[in-house]
Image (tube, rainbow, N blue to C red; front, side, top):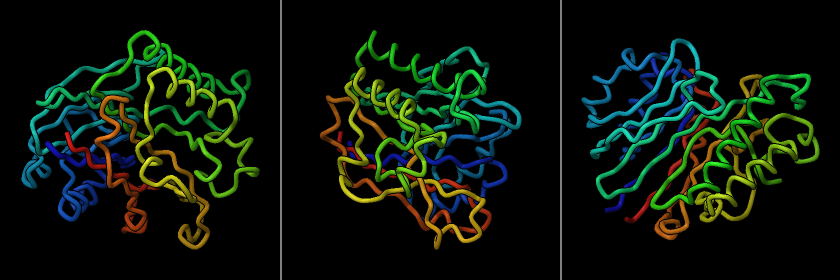
Length: 262
């Protein structure tokens, strides 16, 4: 069963409902995983998505912050969620497809501005979230599993616009990159985006602070799609829809797509 999955930090699903509809109409992924929905589940505009064929949804939400949702036009069932680091945040939800594949949608904490857990509690929470993920995958190796989301880390030198300039900037610091690598190793995860696009600069996020984000092109690849080793070979066709960052009143993230033949 081939299916296409997309992940996108939407930065308010209600504010950008029209952009979600536009993406669904124009690109028609089978499954769309959203982060930073900033909405209680009951206020997500499900009816407008259902009219476009996306009649299935699993989600966790809260008012004004965080929030994750999986919209699908193929049947999915709720596979649960976990409150990592017991923050009480809606940052994870999972869905199971009829073929047994489980999709985990994560919104990892951004980590604040100071890369020092002693001076910045949010950075410590981010590292602890990542450590808990690592330990989870050490305890049980993923099978038939896809992990997607805004992981808020750009791991490779060519995942950022300037490696040296960002070594002390949250999202690209050595300790964050190391934590992410430990998670990948623990679960034997395959970064399917970089498997498909192995070379060259690749970004999925551009700051709102840039007056002309496209010309400045100071991006980072914060959004990821990983696959467990047993299904990684079924992934292909990965792409980042950079042009979506240029839509009217956009999210600062662009959606990331991959197709699986399973």
